[in-house]
Length: 382
Image (cartoon, rainbow, N blue to C red; front, top):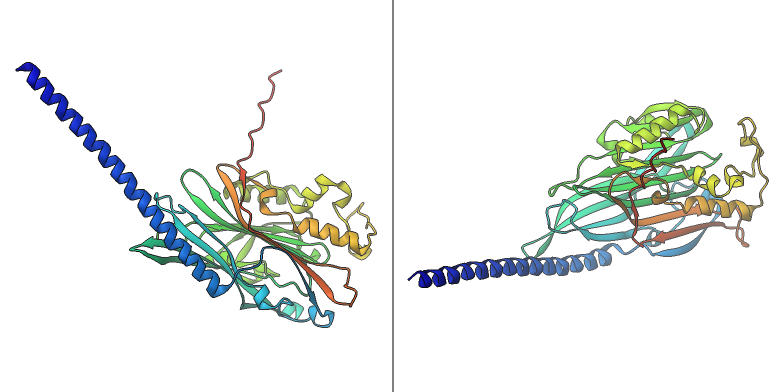
């Protein structure tokens, strides 16, 4: 009798184990089937988006503009077909719920205009539209949308600009980040970084920072957003006048201790360390490139001398500076940074043979990843 009971108990245990394993396998199959269905749904939606909005061409492109209109027009010298469209689509678990979502980004021109009475300037802007999609019920449903507007036209004083869109991913969250860099006349620059998250229903308000050496009368500035509107309003000429951003600190030089402390502290609060400006990166690679200009009149810092360059050398330096993306300027304190798209554009000083202004654009959609910064070695106790 004992042997019979033992056999029955063994059979029952085996049945339970088998049932448990079958249940686990079935659940895994269901999960795999759902993921496969979602992938097909997302793929179909991507094709629809690309057909509807077009795709911004990857690689290098060259454009020309009439100099008579280039410095006075408020419109982009590049035709809209070659200037707008889908920048990327990306599938991953953005809200960390175990299910993947589809994120798309497209660029639309002419939706916002910036006016500056001080400079008698009216300039077109661009909208960068982020859209998050969820796969549910066999359909691809738009779950959230967010627009980041950027002063983004190559005219008047904008020699060069770039935009890096990347994600900062840690164990518990995914930040969607947009960094813009503008290099203007007389050597001032403006860097703006904003980031936000998707919580499964909507995009968060987010956070951000701006810093740069601006125009001489405005000095060096590090700023923080004072409203959600600021996070969708980047790279205008004088942001504090719009009530969106306020100064954390103003100084006379990018080497000022208070400025660097505010910049680096603000970046660390957003999750990034080892901050370097494009100028610092250029100087590290070649000290002679730290400050180069063909106009001696704008050199007003003690001990600074203009380096006489020909137009080709100046254009080469501009291309190098504008080609530096966010992944080269700082590291994540934790997790990884993955670049989804990088767009750089600059105006050549050297005219074409037919007397036209030359514009060069580079679009990279190659996904690049930077891991967290390496920890510094422990100091010797000796």
